[in-house]
Length: 257
Image (cartoon, rainbow, N blue to C red; front, side, top):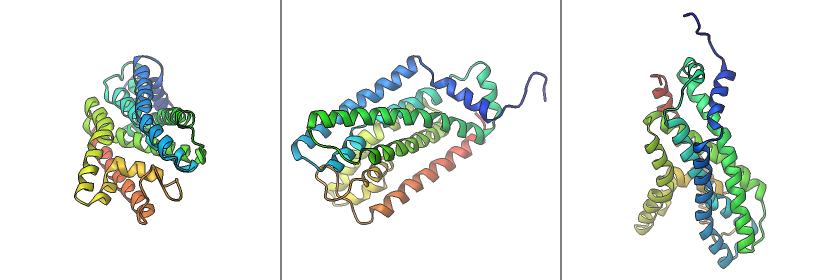
């Protein structure tokens, strides 16, 4: 080993990653993106809930899974913190010495912590707005919130894999924001027009959201009806997308930074 270069462990690598989560312009951009996306997404949920009066469990699930803008904040976070070229100074050495698998795991773990914060804050704002503006009772909030946080962490892992493969900030943010908000709804609408609405369950963002919405029991007013195959199909679809992205990211990570 060359003089002055010492091996580092997982603790040092995670310390390097956590340095990236501190305050600054990036943190403001991430937080603002999540809040604005939450306010925009919650507006139609409030309108539907106040007009159609869903059950308390469905209202909570709709507020959390339809109103939270955490997925946008996570996309901006991964794009700015992982995709951007900002590994400078002493933290760079520890990160590079980990090797491909270690680097990818350290990045994913650091982003998962941020995803938990964004999901909790965004969902809490959405729940507060729906409860206060729509005037509907909410039930099953801990379950809906816990599922949302877990799925947001998985969404963060997907985007970490994507940015590892593409090495592009813009591609990662564009995919994380436009695909679930614009592209997938357009595809779902086209599928519904030709009588193939069930195929939308194969889309990554749609499958992830519908998986979270399974927590709302009984007949639905605001949320889409549950197909009998959904409890099996949706986890399988999400698992397949996770496996595919993980394989691609691991292969890319092994080739170096």
